[in-house]
Length: 334
Image (tube, rainbow, N blue to C red; front, side, top):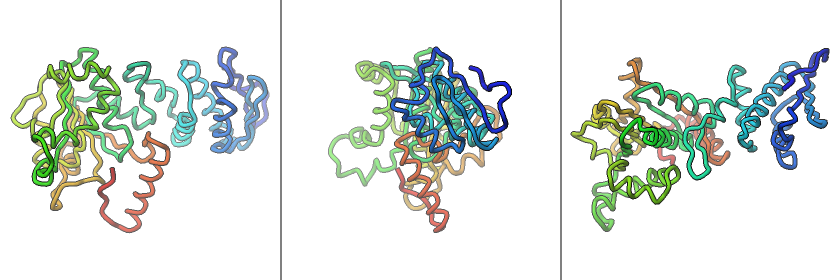
């Protein structure tokens, strides 16, 4: 790519898109991406053939140039762009000029049935990188930020690449007692609804016909947190989900299950504590205890990292603003 024409006046930059890249890939079908770019960038954008000319204030043109540079880099990899990925590139470049959104959006974690799981935001990439580099990683953030999904994708990748021999997925089932007593079936039947999101994610990442075999053989175990007590978990990738609903004692119990050759990822949202009677959350307490220890990472995700429908991020941010304004304790969001 030729970034700038020689002798261009200040406030003007021209980008020549390589002939090997279809302009529809960069601008979108019926200029869908171009409309997003025009609405989110302050520079004026003019397209003629394979040349894109940007005019406006120096900082506005510079931002627009970086955004188009990154979009073209992503297009070169053969990965398709979407309106959401274009918005994510703009958001990342606006927040930090040193970021390379193309490196975030093209990092593959896991592929299955023609679908590839990748981080979609800078914080998600930092989270995934922290999992690679540390034995114990905490991913804390609101609903929809991908903290559990990405941890499970890393677990499946570790199993497939023979880094571990098994995957253990666990959640605290805080209502597996009297409040579920009226439901029919065994204790396992009553607990199953609390583990269902983990099963659903597994079916996204592994061929459905293989999942029952892996569960039956114990290569993948999905169980309530209480089932971890008294065990030492060697050569395993262990994911604790909904960790905000652990007590401090449960959190200590879980973390001390770590065995040789294993990796732990703990995920949760401290604004969604459902513990009865105002009991303290182990997730809220643990950072003050473990922060600064080698080989342990704490990663914070925010409403900007929500990767569900774009409205979900705005809903989460609106609730956060409301909680701050009214100084009310948060909780109950799912």
